[in-house]
Image 1: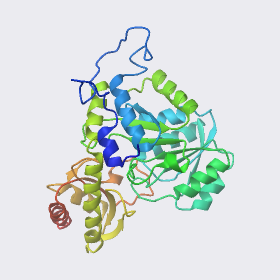
Image 2: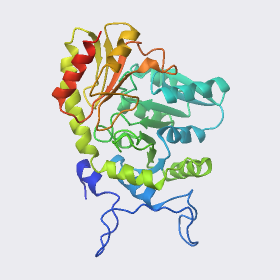
Image 3: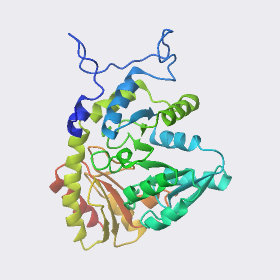
Image 4: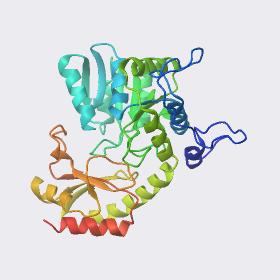
Length: 351
């Protein structure tokens, strides 16, 4: 039966209905299983992981594996590529991925072709002979939106694999597998779990052979999640649509106000989601002071939680030089929007 994602988030990954059966899956704390079953050993699977994987897979429309972190999930994708394989990727995106790809390129592990995802034709031109196109849309923290439909179709026409980081948009906005992508990645840490208490990642695919290769990578590289973390993530997923929709509503209201503030020179927002990036009319030091002056919005690195967070992204040495020194990334939470705006106003008044 087709369901809305709000319903799927609540119902998927539940135990079978039996008299006096539990409504929620248990936390299965074991490393060892009796012989004769499908799991075999604690590094290969766990019933609590499986419940979370079922729920994320139902939202993304594919079979899912969960990992110990988003970076572990991304690393699993790159690990199955042959040495020297050409990869097309954005020239600005999540800093952890940028560091990883640059190190792979410099060492010869991969041949990375960095592209501007806003220039659709240049991305397509870079695909010739590539093994994988890795797309982040919207990008982090610039919030550039790629033409996924066109780019995925072009890659598939050339027989190239496509992976999409769907962390920012989430399956409430886009489902890349339905567009033809091979892999969809999430930092489950962010919107899916939503409470800033879990580190986890996921990969979803409709290709059974690819799923096995990724499963083997997870098993033999040891990038497995803990059962309790998986249980927490699934608990958070139950309210994911409610949280995301409220945060998105708040973000859309704040974008209008930010755009007319005299101390802000540019607002970046793709029209959906709960992440806003904006640039302050001032120095890097003044921008840093804004982030440190908030009373309600937490000055912290991460996003997607019920609480609002912000930071000057260039405070991190590994952040891309293409990101302006005065750029603040704001992850909008579920607080009352008037309280958020009052806090932003007071912080901007500090410079």
